[in-house]
Length: 160
Ligand code: ADP
Image (cartoon, rainbow, N blue to C red):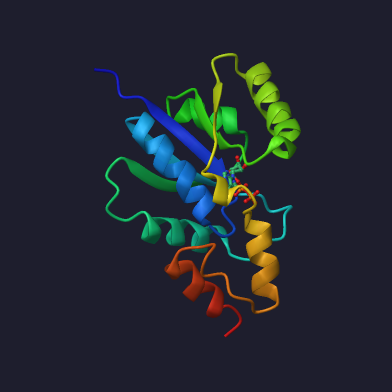
């Protein structure tokens, strides 16, 4: 039987309950899900790529059909390397659509075999983004309803 692998790429800076909701859904649909942290040195990040990968690994520990890694360069090249054409993206609201459609169309132009699959999180996570978490963390606010407890601790440990 052919194993169907999908890639869920993102910044995950840091991983939130919204990302985890999408990960749950995708891992139920596909045989294997690779959660991939995009290395983008042009962006300013709260956590290093290594820290983001480590956090995802801790939070997803024991999940047999999920692996976590990072990649640099074009997503279509990375997908080829992973021998899959399936990309998972989350859609929170219509406001995500413009950007996501553009990326999906570009990826399909670069590599016609690429298929982007959009998944919707449960309603309560539609407002949630890593940038909201970073903003609250900046002012030392409570993020415990937005991210897993391991991430809450990692945020508390920043700058110490
Ligand atoms: P962000 O900084 O916007 O949280 P990422 O680059 O880490 O985003 O996002 C990776 C993917 O996960 C994107 O497709 C994004 O739309 C999706 N995503 C992010 N947060 C959520 C959420 N709360 N619910 C569903 N999808 C989400």
